[in-house]
Length: 208
Image (tube, rainbow, N blue to C red; front, top):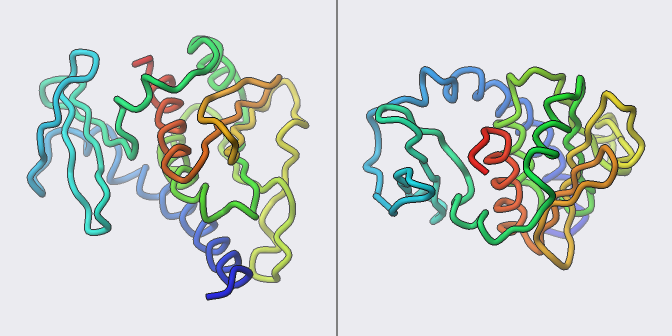
């Protein structure tokens, strides 16, 4: 598949994924359903900050992680929480307050990097649904194809005081930065972006 066609296809995947994960978060990943479940055998991976960590291998040869917060309560994470320990960023309290004090939170990415940011994007779409703010999705510039042309565009650094932008960005380092009202989630590749997004999630549930 040519690169241009890959971009068109992945753009469509991202749009549909944001809708699908929003729905899943309201059903499968509700607190009631995150409690002890029957299903595939989980592998015990050790402890993280005094909590048991489990892994479940997928058909794509990747791992879904489950962190045991309470005896009968686990949360699902796409990133290994142990990877978050080496990712630098601003004070967690600043990130937490910036997001939860906002009335609108955008998740924004460069459409030219959709292949690399796709997994982190869909994970954040799942995780941020049903939070006490309006959640929106946008790209930093328009898609050029007709199929994705209606996808919203948002300048990640043009915000009002009541808005926060989470900007997923390919970079030469893996970290989290705050630039005004914009939280930049940097990663060198797909999995670094997933890990940095995972650190952001852990901040928002006050585990970091």
